[in-house]
Amino acid sequence: MTTARPLFYAALTADFFNASGEPKFRDLGLTQFSDHSHVQVQPFAQHSPVIEAAQLATCHGVVVLTPRVTAESLLGATNLLVVSRFGVGYDSVDVEACTQAGVMVTITAGAVDRPVAEATVGWMIALSHHMLVKDRLVRTGQWQARTDYMGRELRERQLGVIGLGGIGRELLRLLQTFGMQQPLVFDPFLSTETAAQLGVRLVSLEELLRASDFVSIHCPLTEQTRGLIGAAELAQMRPDAWLLNTARGGIIDEDALEAALDAGRLAGAALDCFTEEPVLQPSRFARFENVFLAPHSIAWTDELFRDIGRMACGSLLDVSLGRRPHGLLNPVLLTQADFRARWSALTGIPQDLLPNR
Image (cartoon, rainbow, N blue to C red; front, side, top):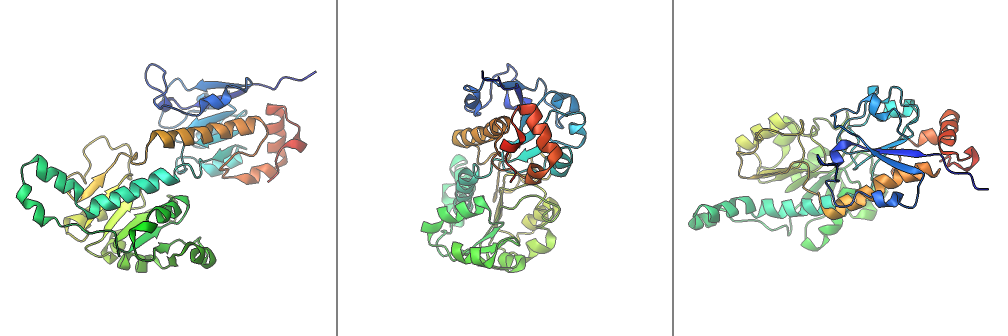
């Protein structure tokens, strides 16, 4: 006689759904649960910028879009086994607090690489060809001014990448046919051997800033990278260089960037993320015709959300079935006896069948 699996309650934050309760996005990966009747999906009824403890009281796993997960969110969440972040950034989740509370944290590593890299290439071309201004020239009848805005090709230009994770590597792959110079990379965690294999040159941040036509940021927001690009760093960039940030707000000092743009010390910028989000008033950068802006969604595509959704929901399914989830940030929990005992008790899976690494 087969013993039925204990129910596994999977929650999704309310910002995945519209006012009528329908998903905002075409495919969130929920169909993965169709053949697993032990998984019960429970969307949050209300949106809160910070997940409240009461919302997690009965959950075994939760997929999180924009709300923050703090130590206070976890109070009393004795059934919670996993927080699955819908994306690769995890600065909104207190990973240390989750680890102390015996909660796994996962990200959808790899799912965002192609769309973010593709959008970055698009912005590089748009910036260097003055596409924003040239569109305005036609809309406002200034055809004759076109000679004032000669563009520059990517060919023979120097790219500098800050942070060479999956997105940065995909960006390099997409740019291989453009005839650019050997990429410069600043990444304290990249070995010289790996750099050689990837065909990039590891340099200091100062050298990268001084030499690059395009500086593209692809590192996470941490205490070490917060304010990484400030007034001193912007002063090291060439006045004909562009700065792109599709990573996280807070890495660039926005006051310093605004001042540099005002002074004409940069050719332009492209920003998908900001220190304070959401930006509900016109951005301070809206007045610059050499700056592209996006509401932290430049890479949002149907394909991206399909892939992220399947991966994020797949992490919850894996945990419910006693498997190591993809993109696990705190694998130390897999070796802790108290966590393994709780995981076994909540899922009905013997401890000796649970992964330990």
